[in-house]
Amino acid sequence: MFKLADLQGNILRGYTNKPHVRYLILEVVERSAARRWLADSVSGRNGVPQITSGDWGEKKPDTCFNIGLTYEGLRALGTPSASLKMFPTEFVEGMTARAVKLGDVGRSAPENWPAPFNEPKRVHLIATIYAEKVEQLDVVQERALTDVKAFKLLDTREGYNFPGDVVHFGYRDNITQPRFEGVPDSQRHPDRQPKAPLGTVLLGHPTNLEGLTWRVPQPAELGHNGTFNAFRVLKQDVTGFEKYLDQAASYLLEHPQRDELLPPGAEEKIGQGLSIEGLSRPAALREIVAANLCGRWRDGTPLALSADAPDPNADLTDFDYVGVGDARCPHGAHIRRCNPRGGQIVQRIANNSRRLVRRGVPYGPPYDPANLYDPTKPGDGDEPERGLLGNFIGASLGAQFEAMSCDWLNLGLQDPRITGSNDPISGTNDPDTSWFDLPLKSGGKIRLPGFPEFVSTRGGAYTFLPSLKAIRFLGSL
Image (cartoon, rainbow, N blue to C red; front, side, top):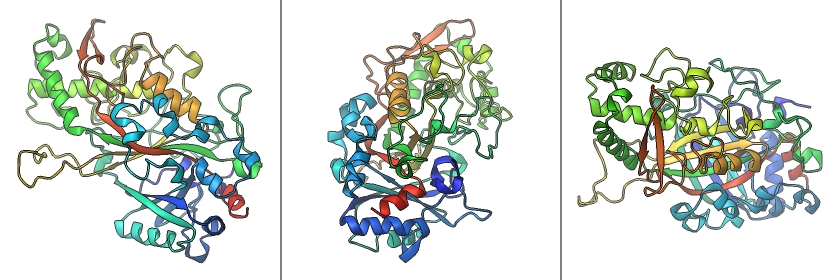
């Protein structure tokens, strides 16, 4: 049985009108008080913020509030051991123990994560507040922490959606999400991908694999209609990314096939698409590289639909990796690795599967090339950290999030043409071994070498997003 009112609202619906987000990372102090807090959160009793459901009626709430529980959090609440044993291994072990599978090595390794993620057994509950203004975040946080016997605040993480849904690397983001069978479709854009079965994201429902459903922790009121979330704090080296685009443009200017990649005079059309007057040849090459690395021009235009220049009139979601689009969008591009759509890949059963609900918001100040950090200047201090607070939601952390992170992003196992390379933007890259192929109209390619690691992990946790019925159950233990 499926009712939007029984789901937490951040699973199937994005809070697009709430640009400010704050994560409260909490530790259970006293089990009985934490249970009372959970029971009160379903209806908003005793001042506790009310959990926002997937069905808020005609009027959108001023603020939205949702929670996720780690395995250690479920244990701290006294969840029956028989129920705990039914949760999947990757959730039980937690994100820290799964680091190698996720590519969290080197500077991304958990031993380099700051507090509180350096003590994962203390991270019990992550509460998320969404609001239009920062002042509203403060009010809800104060209400959430009134009962000091229930939880201890370990830390907060805060983000803000930039105007135009642009993220730090300069790309337009938040373009598309899976559409689900049986869920009212309010998509702004058409999408030729098939609607995903509810079991893609909710426990207890059919998946796109015939006869297979993910195990539901019992009792059913605990596990049914729940899902899992990989919460990630991802630091982004924007300065390094822009420097690499400079480096790649210089390399391409000297390449014998440069005119096939960028015919003379094509700079103007690219500039028009990006609303940049007088775009120089090096600057145009930078944008071509950026577009190929992502699979979209920085305005969001898919290369599968318009490979030669951005097209303001192109549909941002209604495309597939077949035919002309297959040839012109690099097989190793970021969005193609994350979601191969209906394109041919080695794991045929994975076409249009391993889909995830992705919710992300930037943190840190916007990148300003005119005001860069200079360590030689007195008083400049440290360069501010910037990145993405990401949520990757699905019914199976192992078969969806981890398989995507390992097999597709960091090994390229879905296509022999990219096997052995990592995702050029978010992969665990080493300049000595990394590479990326730019496709040419003739069918040839130009190989770009020397990718550094642009994204590093600064923390995270695997959480279970319980239904409202499950939150009542946990509150009544």
